[in-house]
Length: 380
Image (cartoon, rainbow, N blue to C red; front, side, top):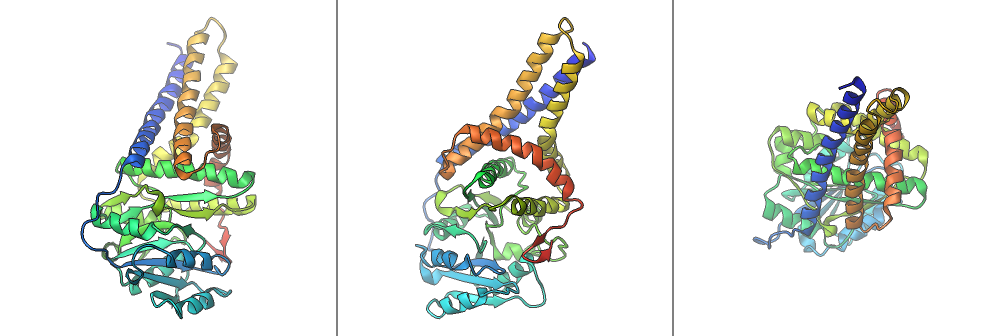
């Protein structure tokens, strides 16, 4: 066996192993989409919806209207909005609505700042045994709280991961939609493996007692990562983690409208991954990110060095199989997730999105080691 044949075999083996894993995620996702929650067990319980808000005056009112219109008994829904030193009319919006809505409560953040401090402050005043996190720019349907509360009663979870749909107009938004659909599939697949690693803080729920038992975010020095670090703490404490794939439990957020904002958002997200302590999980995630570059480099070397008569046909059969093994399962998973989210754009857009992600993800990961972008006026 020549060294070039060995190189092609290694590339194919890596791609095939990744294909088997992603295909497992896809099958698990399809199974979960067809499963239903078990029937209600017992009476409904009080649930606290916690909204950490900073300068959210332009988006908060529609969200609060969505929460007011929930089909869960209104007296069993406490909504806590924690104002994180907003400079706009965020607090006034809550105060005006609270006049006619006794279950709506405003908490002004004290000396601390940032989303984690806001969540910690909100949990302290939460009256419900279950706390449901919601970003201030999200929208949700009327059945969300009911489905989340039912999942906790029937599943016995301490932490519940929930779906988020990204929408928007234009090419930049479309690429974010593709990326987030793929990440939703990956998040579910990792959970199905028993290796929950990523979550979305726009839609996340936990038992208050479990949050307090793991220390919340006490001692956490990272400005971002309220979602993944809570998952990490729950895993470390061996707390049961669930994942509810239900359209009624989903929230919708708008994609960043321009490229600059999208890049800054991804720099924030990438930066927090340095604090994740799951070495094996990070290694596998990194391998998945660089795999297409490994395939590209291998293809370039083989195209330069291998000639017809030197095992050319066998080598390129392996490389063609490797590229197909990388591309097809990821596109299949993304397409299934998109259809479940109600996005029926074709697979061609998913291919473009995957190629774009392949190009910018490593650069974002490297840049996040040095660049600290600002978010709502703060360095993160």
